[in-house]
Structures are given as C-alpha cells and as structure tokens.
Length: 270
Image (cartoon, rainbow, N blue to C red; front, side, top):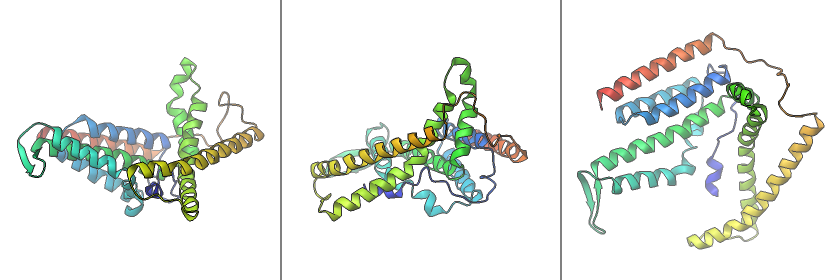
C-alpha cells in the first residue's frame, strides 16, 4: 500500500510546453502508435532507440525525471517477475547457472526478459506522459472525437468518454485516499508487517473504508452532475472545439520519422 503514493498516473501537470499545446487526439494517437511500435519487433537496439525517443518527449514536455520515473516503482514486482520468468523458462544457450538450486539462465531468456521489461516500462511511461500533458476536459473531448465513428453503431461515445475521463481523473484521488486510510489505521495500531498471510489480512481494514469512500464520492459526483443538468452525451455541444494546428502536423511528421528509424533499426539488427 505504501507504493501507491508513487503512482502519479492521472495527474495533470499544468506547464506551458509544445506537447501540452498539441491537440489531445494527436497525443492519444501518438501514444498508442508508440505503444504498438514497442511490441511489433523483437529488436533490442530498436527498443533502446524508442527509450531515447521517450526521454526526448519528456524533455520537450518539461516533465521532471523524478516525477516521470517514479511511476515505475509500483510496478517493480511485475517487471521483476517478467525478467525472471523469461530468464529461467526460455530455452537456449546457458549464460549462467545458480549452483544452490541448479537452475540455468539462458542468453535468449535474458534478452527476451530485458525486451519485455522495456516494453512494459514504455507503456507505463508513455501513459504517464500523455496524462501529464492533457487536461481532463481535453482528454474527454479527445476520446469522444476518436470514438465518434462508433456512433453509427449506436455506441454511446459521449458517456463512454466521460466514464474513462472520470476514472482517470479520480485515480489520483483514490490513491491519496488509500494512503490517508492507511495512515489512520496504522495510527490506530494496525500492523502491516510480517508474513504474506498477515499482510493480506491487514488489507481488509484498508479496503472496506476505501470502498465506502469511493461510493460516497461517486454519489456526490452523480448529484453534482444532475444538478448541473447533465443528461448524457447525445446532442451536447463543446465549449472548446478541437481543431488541428501546425504543431500537430509537425508532430505527425516526427512520428513518421520515428517509425521509419525504428523499422530500419529493427531490420538491421534482426
């Protein structure tokens, strides 16, 4: 539970940067494209290049390194398990052997483990960058615009976009609430140290107050939306209409260049 305070996903960082001024649809499509790109080729040099691109994007967005990379810490266990499973269970030439248990680590397993570790890390960091640079209202409008073709199939894109936006918006709030409940329960004598079974049992006094608090906030939000006359997304207009500008065109050209270099590297070092 203590690791929750390191999750900063869903927090908008109000900074004037080139990336902040882009259309939200450009940022969403670019983020999804880079995520897909990380999984289409098994090339370590290409993935390292993609990591350099990610760092460059964070520099353009003026996001502090500490704030960006702290998103990795809550998922360290997942990254560790990914590396371990690939290292020990992928067949290939033996790189090293652990004498105590007689387990062998293959060279191909280490390479695969590192690649999947990088891929998962990129997904987390790319999501964080997009959410840092996109205000909640812009994100809602962008999601609704991207999903607008589904209206032909009677999909309630307005409500769907609103639900996604609310979920992302309240993620930091729930994390802060979970940390507050943990501190309160610890001050009352709750012991979260010890064996795994003891830690799991100790989560019950934390989960129940958090669920009650979440339901209360959801009810308050519903009452507030009803009081403001919200009746669904059908026929609603937007105060700020989304439109592409010159910066979005430059960003698109940059994405094309990144994809081209990535594919060249992946083929050269295949």
